[in-house]
Image (cartoon, rainbow over all chains, first blue to last red; front, side):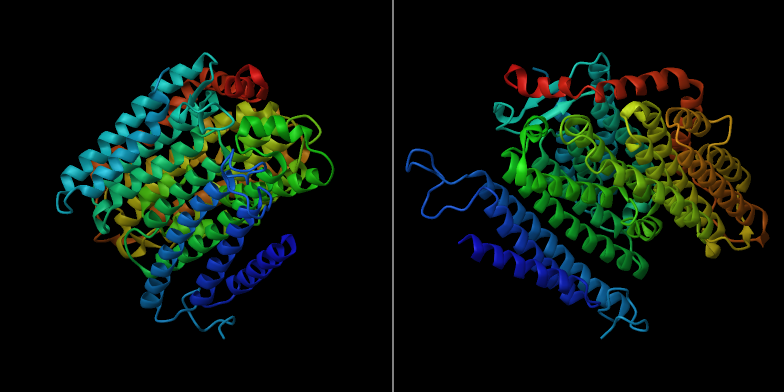
Length: 112
Length: 493
């Protein structure tokens, strides 16, 4: 379980970081989305991983920590709003510069 | 229990919501709502400053949940000072914007209020995750404000700014996750206590978490190597927005100082990351000096002056002990307000020069240029730190408080760079003229807004001693984290 979650977080974050470093806005948006997914799973795991345990005291002997679940909900909502904003901004940049290069011009290196 | 402490968050939140409801065509109503909110904030900030001035630390438990479990708002002298500074900066900036800049795009006033809410919340909160939430509130408002008005340069700078800050938020969350995983708390006071007891592998994880926090706060504070977004974003933003942004770097500084003073002043984790922050602050100071020399526009130059003040302040705060915090806070107030005023001044000069804008090229004669040149002269003296104005007093106090030769050399060299940059800018903008142009005279309301901001400089100079004493008291309280911890956790810690 721990290994699986760790691998998932690792893959999400590393692909996210790789895509963030691309020179086009679309991969950057995708990269930031994957990065925030990885971070959300990480946050979820920070209270310790337990299987089949409800986050309510009294229903079982060893309940899951409920706080990370509340925190990750907040983080998801914020991340969602930010991604939506970034998509709009990327579209606006495309319209203003006639290119989807993050620097607004294709002439320099870094374009594909 | 006094409920005034939550007013700096509630007032702009309510005003911002009202502003979203108001009909788009009613500009006058929107302006009145915004200005009313800003003046109410100013009044509340003064009230809270009075409340905190005798050294009481007020704790406000949201929903009446006891401290480590619920979210608390904490008002001590440092918070009150920052709230007051924000309100003093916001009112003239909004007054300036109400002369026409607010109509360049939709919802300027609403965003401005939400920005204020985020900044005030970040200063007030006593909970690390809540700090993250308020950071996001102030960031998303700042994204909108930075893009306010149109233009390809603004969109390009905005895209970089947003992408960088999203990565910063991800790192912040990872840091918070590690902190919760190792200490089991996110309340700042509780964290300060529990962090001391962490040992073994968990301690290594905790160190990683705190260093991640320094990186994130460093990004907000525009610390080397994370400051490259700032000049483009600030120089391309609308003038009143750039003026308000002068406080944003200080939010990052505040967060570093708050967490550091609480948890890492002494104990087994004392001085965590302090060497690194000190070195980075000095590098920031040096590079900002070079940036000032290389700037080709007044807006960019002022943006580098903002970075220079960040380097100056953080170096003074992290050189070893917090004894230099008093002069640093005095300098913080001075530099924030003067940089805000310079952004407004740069805009007035650009309007007066028409096509030439605020670039350092020969341009037409500025209508009523004498007044602007006079104000520029005063602002330049203050920001560079020449006698007799408040910049000089602040720098002398800093030099006295930080007896490190390297800091002296860098601070004085950076001051020299600032002097050269400001004189070059002034002489090419006000003296190298090509004849009468079609620039606009500075309007009365814009000039008034600028004068209100600049009036702080003579005020801080004349009342330098009481101001410095007040800053010293703030620093004194900061150096006693146990008072804060006791106030938040009560007797149980």
